[in-house]
Length: 424
Ligand code: IMP
Image 1 (cartoon, rainbow, N blue to C red):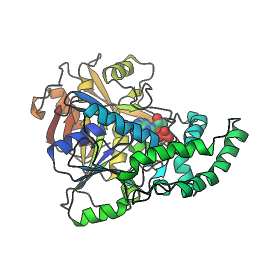
Image 2: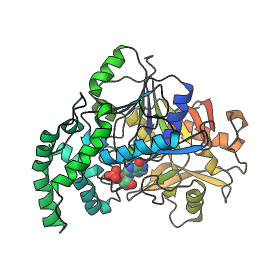
Image 3: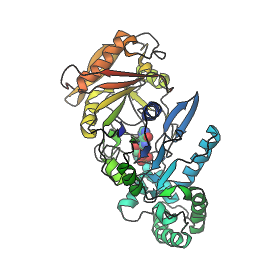
Image 4: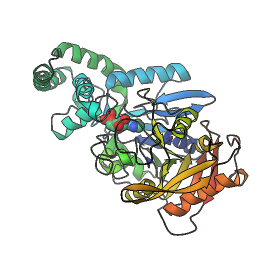
């Protein structure tokens, strides 16, 4: 293959700093389209550009690269009012008018009753409460409402059809909300008015993205795909039922775009340790442990979307290897390596296997030096180089990028190749 197509995918439980990697690649390579294919505003993608922090949720994180068309494709679920707020905020902060956005008419709408139901039912999983699960549930249950039911690809707002469409769903939703949860019923007029208001702002971006992708593919354009969440949160391959409701793995790109793409590169993004927000298994967690607290504080591990403190633990190479297989990863990008500088014990643990269901660790040395200013692999402390080599050896994958701080330029391009077949 030599089409330049690249997928940037989370290989853990989300929050791997995928957006940092994506933004770096967009700044050094030529891509024509950046595509979000799954999830919605449950995601929190942070990039630092010229010393300014931008947090994106459903807006693709490449939006501030003006020559790149940023697409919210059919597999994404969209809260229209939230998206309008995000566009307005981004324009205000950046001083740039957003022109390079395209939204699929087949993306499903997150309705207010989805958000309410998520808040009422999502506690046992620890969801973000953004309505993601209930929206995908309605999609599968054939009750979903698409952007195209509200806005046609010609930009027309389909008022009468939309009122009828929402009205037919609302009866059922209000029965659940009032009967099962003792909530007040939602009012049709309020819902559609809010959607019409958002539609005025969004109508110019709506298109048939499957057609757009096919046309651009034929013209030899280069695509980059912006993953949301991580493999262990994939609805099929993750730690079910403690997962999100979308396809976070590479195969999600096909269904989430409607086009069979081939990739030059699938970059598995791996944070140098592990974090998880919400409930669910976490074998290498450092719970009530000073090292876990150290990682949480130094790594500023607070959820971008919910403000929740992230659970922290050691790197789990068994999970990373599993993610590599499913995602057909061709190379790894290791992020937040700087957080492991100066570990209080001077030691790092890496989970390399399980015995009787318990993680088995390999112990490595930490390094005292601050590495945030380093830009060459060879200048990293020896222990940091060993840590990276161990990851490559045990997963059998090359490491091509290492992030040593949040800024775009705090990134090391390298080529660390595995010295032996996968051992993890
Ligand atoms: P939902 O996606 O809101 O339904 O939440 C399901 C699970 O996925 C919860 O444990 C969330 O904390 C987690 N989750 C959802 N989105 C993200 C993300 O972007 N990063 C990390 N965890 C996430």
